[in-house]
Length: 360
Ligand SMILES: [Zn+2]
Image 1 (cartoon, rainbow, N blue to C red):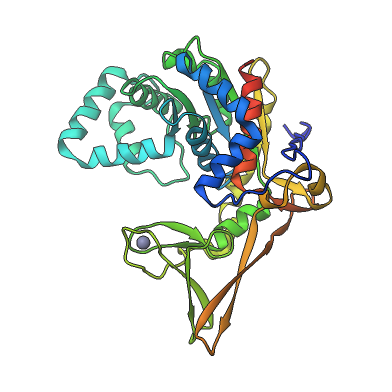
Image 2: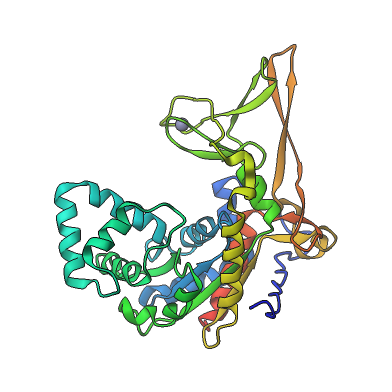
């Protein structure tokens, strides 16, 4: 494994020419226009394809690399009613709930009795499901049985699978996965996502969560529309702007101040998994990268596609917070000074590569 060559994630050019229009990518209407401008014909090809066909895409990226963000945005832009983001983590959380409900627990156990085949007894399986801490993996045979059950309940759609394969020994199962869930004739593809660890680190460190509605934002990268200042503590804070919520002060989650230090081992495993998946033959791969060297940016992308960082100043006379922004610079994993892209340009790259992977 160590002798494996590092994957080169190519830069993707979204820039057309210097006179093309500018879009505010935080505005939903402008975001729509942006996708039409950058990938209109490709979106049309995918829509036509999805009228009668599906695909399965496996998302492989480090924790907090934006897997859900990219695939949900892709679905939203291309065909929300034909594409589904399937998260194995969410599925397991739902199973946890089933186990705590008397009726649903019975149904689940009866299902497992009939369908689970593997190296553990039913009692051991239930124990594993109930006493699980997040670092122990559930047996692959169990995960597959549960995924099969979940997918058979749903209408057949194109799938982005998030959270499978999760471990090296699950990768080869992915090769037969579409047979297992009844998608035998549908093309499948691996989507490998490259995000610098410094980006993941700051996403965690500056994350703020609403204690009431659990909405998650980022003080540095994705603020709410209202920002407050605590004169005593001398710190800025976000105010929840979810219209169904009550304007609560958002707070850091315990442990987030450690950033990636707390998940270093997990990130190392995720990296290994990406490398391993890359080495597979016979299955197309889409390579997405989140960052672009500062010195290449001018030729490849437009300025408005770069993630800005927000910072704040306190006007003590007017008693108000001034929100300021500038282009956010980070160092990528190779030590190159880079920008981090906003999700839309990465999704444009995903759209183009998907068209190619499906030979449209
Ligand atoms: Zn809230």
